[in-house]
Image (cartoon, rainbow over all chains, first blue to last red; front, side):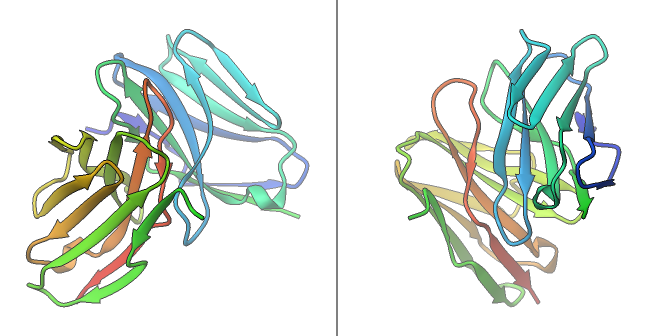
Length: 112
Length: 112
C-alpha cells in the first residue's frame, strides 16, 4: 500500500511561470514532510520541509503548503527556471521513528 | 569533499556473485540508511541503522545484509546477486530529531 503518492509522473512548464507539484499521503501519523530534488547521476538533495504544526513554509522561490485535513501537500516554484528541471520526490516521516517514506517522484521540465 | 561518499559508483556483476557497496560519511551523524531506486518506483528503504549497535530492516531487506563498521561507515551486501537487484543504490545519513537525510551520489549496480 503506497502511503505517499505523487500522481503526476511528469510536469512541463514554461520558464518564468509557476510549477506546482502535488503529493498525497494516507498515513495520519506522518508529521514531517520533505521535498527532494534529484538530477540524473546524482543523489537526491534536500529542498524544503514542513512540520505538521505549520501549513506553509517558504524558502526563496520554493514554498510548500500542507493541508492536513486533505492529507495533501504541494510544492510551488516561482518563477520556474530551466535549472529546476529534475525529478522531485515528496517524503514523509512520523514521530516514532526517523524513516522516510518516499513518493515515486515527478519529473519537472522547465522549458526556456 | 563530499559529505557522503559511495563506492563503487558503477558495478556490473554476474548472477550469484557476492558484492559489497560501501558508504562513508563525514557529517558526524549517527543515523545511516540504504535505499534502492527503480524506475517509476521512487526510493525504497532496504536497511537503516541509528547507531553502531543498531541495525533495522526496511521494507525490502530480503536478499540484502548490512554492516555498520563505525559511526561513519555503513556497508550493504548482496550475498548472491540476482538480476532483479539491478538498480540505483543510495546511502543517506541524518542527524538528531526529525530532520532531512543527506544522500550520497549513488551506485549503479547491474546484475547480468
